[in-house]
Image (cartoon, rainbow, N blue to C red; front, top):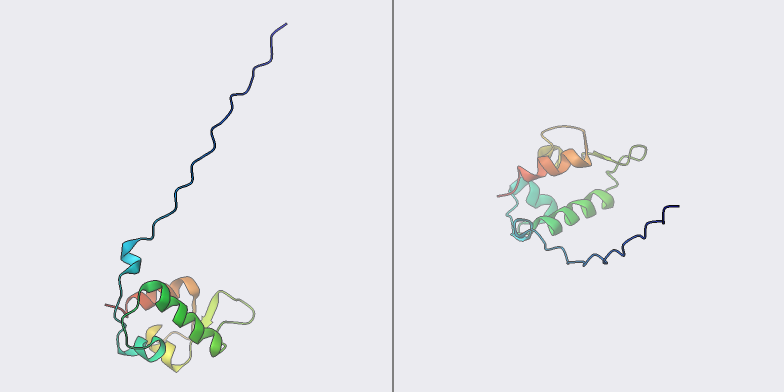
Length: 100
């Protein structure tokens, strides 16, 4: 009769704290169109996105039925290349064209 195999004890994985990407921490300068929404001071991409979302929520521009879609007002239409509605994923791509 074969003996059952003993399972080897696994070592607990050591957790290392994830480092922030330095490129995302570097301040970027919004252009004139974007500065109407987030301000004219240079910001890192995280705070810039946070301010953009504050603007979207304050003005109730997030689509009520499909929450991933953003409805553009006059200020956002300039950033969204004239589109009336974009997805939140497309929004980040379009906003990146308005920073230096």
